[in-house]
Length: 213
Image (cartoon, rainbow, N blue to C red; front, top):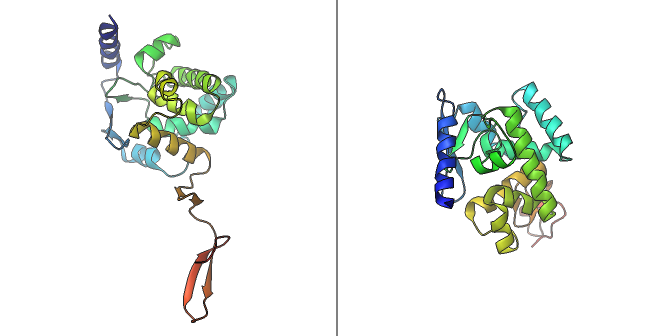
């Protein structure tokens, strides 16, 4: 029965996807998303190291509206949308996740999202679900892991599941939320540097605040 329901849900997603400009999302073994038939602009938005400008004013207003309704930081919602779909409302993953916030058919049905391809409906459903994950797990990291891998996986592992896709997803979303500065060995890239000369008159470039070797 469960398998039949899953197959039916996926069939629903495939039948409902808009035919024109069809877009598919696949995930590589390292967790990197690959969107097929993705525009150059969409790819640039999705892979940007910092939050991009929301591509349409009405989308920005929808995000602000539904983020406020759920008590969410709109920056977090923007980061999720950017990583999930690059703001492409037609995106469909190989597992059947749909639209801007990549709602699974069963999740869309649970949240009474009548049309997952409608941006307003999709954002309402996605923000409602994200709020539920935050309330259940109590942290952004675990809520995002649950959004990506499902709450059962987070509960089973007692933290972020050891899936490459999920680990990459959580790190990327939080990096966008916190300013888009990548982490390297616990230090932020882009810290101020100084040029110094040592006792042998050799030039050294050191990060300000770090200890010289």
